[in-house]
Length: 365
Ligand SMILES: Nc1nc2c(ncn2[C@@H]2O[C@H](COP(=O)(O)OP(=O)(O)OP(=O)(O)O)[C@@H](O)[C@H]2O)c(=O)[nH]1
Ligand SMILES: [Mg+2]
Image 1: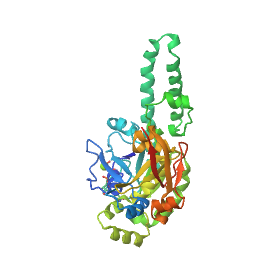
Image 2: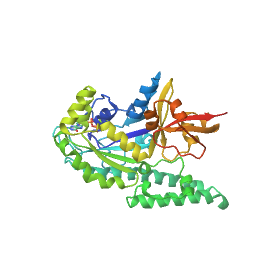
Image 3: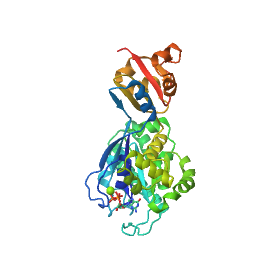
Image 4: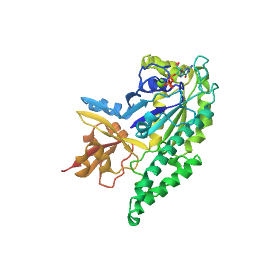
């Protein structure tokens, strides 16, 4: 999973990146970097921790997420010129976008619009993303036109179908409807394969609040919660500066500090949880003396497809899966005992993998 961090200049993108990926990149550099910062962070998983205590494997492998922190440009951003052109392709290849929206007040950090207004900045970004998609749509349509003319009437049909989908998307975007909210039939989806639109990506919005409003965090989240019902969009708050500072403390110190101010979840935990929900992801586990490991899959995948995440051979030669829920296994203690009690199920090709399933795949290639 790859998440691209975007936002207006000086909104706290790099600070959020540092907070959630436990990094220490320079902040306040006004987007002078040529390339995004990249970090891989591991998804904390207490199920895997508990099972590893039983198996004592040589290696415990957590699921991972890659974060890319994109620099913003003061000259183009927020002015309706779209996002920074040089990063558009990279942004389109993300699995989700994380928009850092500034809500913190700090006189020493300039805002491109001078005042602090997070609702305004959310709208600005929605428009930026829509502009970028519209520009891309227009370029595609312009390129198709001469191609169309060079074809015989009978050969034009597939291209005409593509043109009408693109025109449809364009009309909706002009009404400020993001592509993720437009329902497309399977044929239309197929025509658009290989094209990545920024407004079709799931969008996670992080309202970056100031340290002095930390105690209001829960009520801010509550007031924004109704927005989390929107398709492909989730919103939460984080005090990036505070969360980044917690990284320099030990785990116990950080816990204590959090309890003092009543913030129970670490920023990165919240971001991960929401990203999983937003992207419809779950994990299944594999256990053994060599390795205990968490695998991330889309909700609703069949056992062979899930097995394919481990290795394509396991999908191709899938015979059956032996499955037990992680907490059942934990309470019984060993697989041998679980098997004796008939608690390990045999599941076939149609089984839909559930979050927290511990699986052994039997296959033959
Ligand atoms: N007071 C306060 N300052 C913050 C907070 N988050 C970020 N800042 C400050 O805001 C400034 C900009 O932060 P960055 O993380 O560099 O912002 P950015 O969006 O990455 O900036 P560019 O990449 O240059 O667009 C820095 O001086 C941060 O210390 C916050 O929650 N509270
Ligand atoms: Mg930055």
